[in-house]
Image 1 (spheres, rainbow, N blue to C red):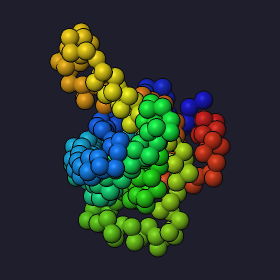
Image 2 (spheres, rainbow, N blue to C red):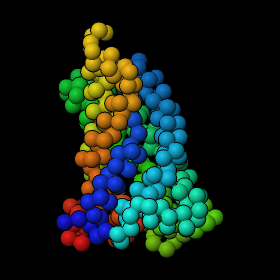
Image 3 (cartoon, rainbow, N blue to C red):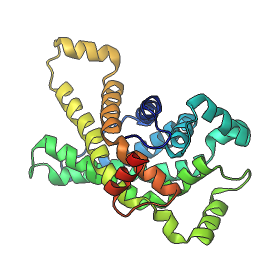
Image 4 (cartoon, one colour):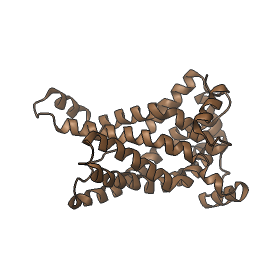
Amino acid sequence: CWPRGMSWPRFILCLLLSIAHASAAKSAPPSSRSDRSVAARHLLSGAAAGAISNTVVAPLDILRLNLIVSQDKRGALRMARDIYARGGLRAFWHGNAADVIRTVPASAVRFYSFAVYKAALLGAVPAATASLLSGGFAGMSAMAVCFPLETVRTRMATLGAAEGVRLVEYTRKLVQSEGAAALYRGLTPSLISVMPYFAVRFGAYDIMQRCYAGLPPDDERRRLLGTLSPAATFGMLAGMAASSLTFPFELVRRRAMVGPSEANPLAAMVRIARE
């Protein structure tokens, strides 16, 4: 019932790498028009944090992506050796320029639109529901805006961009050989998966932050979380939950970016499971 080459240990490893790649989403969206300056600060901080964190974890993400799209049974160590053989240490940062260029506007759009959506929804729905819906809509907005860069980055990371080929040249050759539609291959499962992913990630983080803020100063839970860094703890838990719940869609959308895909993502899941 698993994809070809996707044994239980490999599936769990890919899932753990996906969880590790999920960064904390620190959000305190505005609740009124006068607080929109907070959203602007989120835009800048989200863009900077996304660019730095993705560059730092790029080697793990390269390994994760290659394990996801590979059709054989290579383990993590062998896959890492093969990646190194393709281009040395630099191979672990193949496509990082596309990732950073994508991450900056994507993080900015997510953080800013989350604040805007939350401000619009508060009062119309309960606060917890507003957090979940705002996170999902923010993720979909960013995905739709930056998807071509997501596709290019995934293909450069997994198919091994030729040494010295830069982002613009690689994109030009991709469009010439496969057409502009190749830049949007896998968009449907990506949009479907990003809604629950960011709904859980942003929503859960925001809910935990509000619960923590409501604890009395002398509460034992507040003292315990204070020693663990609340922001890091909430971000880790939210990322783990989001990655775990949406990993099957991650598998489908990444494979769709580098090869043929069904229009129906559920059909793609069935096909992959039968392989």
